[in-house]
Image (cartoon, rainbow, N blue to C red; front, side, top):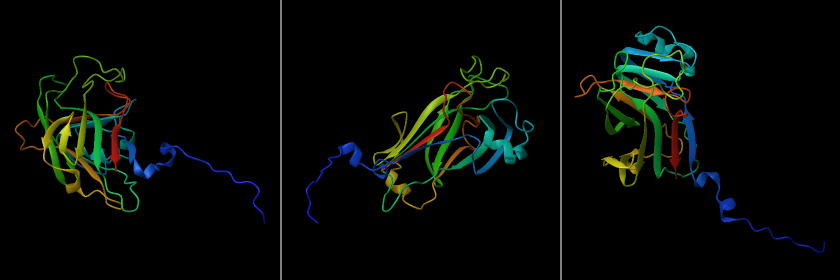
Length: 223
């Protein structure tokens, strides 16, 4: 066969860059935890109703928990499994988690400090003291029927080769390589408040239909 025509197609650098070279982003609903241990005051709410009875930890097992847009507990933890979409020999160069969070007081209390610890794969990476449980103003996305805690603060946890940061402020020396995030490894994220903490003020989490920010727990893994 004689070749009488040949076409050369040049792709842009952006087109040549496969998805696996940039990492991935996933949004985790606040009710999609895989483990928990909580102490009252505690509970869950969807955008339309309470899920089960308030202050009864058993309802954290309720199948409807996956629809939760708001959850809270006085002490303990919730733990999430982050999908791991790394391929081949890829390892994570940076892990960023953005979420809306505050303390948990009975009803609400704008001045209610809480020492909240963030952990990755069973390693504590940062403890941040939240100043309060906010309810004196209505949350922009909080349903009208809800009368307690209204919103939280948006916090951005970032772990890279330079250490661990919250909102750009260094919180610990834990580096991304110490977490050894690679293909096939389980990736766990825990949010906790210990009963032995200096400020045991609980945890409140907000989904995209509660609070002031229309997002769930947003996770970005960069390679």
